[in-house]
Length: 87
Image (cartoon, rainbow, N blue to C red; front, side, top):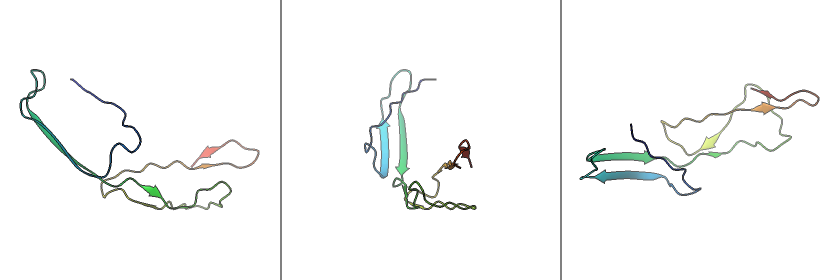
């Protein structure tokens, strides 16, 4: 298996349609083509400033993303005098 990856710099990838084609390829890979559609980045719209009251169930709102996007959230609730507990 041959793999290549490189971290993208901030703002390097924008929402839109992307494609790559190499009709001649290489000995190891051969000809190939790939397409991808990147949705707009998510922007959290819920107030998450320190000191904001939080109640359960908790709702996090955002804009952007796509119907097949996955968003992972970890909320750390800090109670004075106790350890932080992921919820």
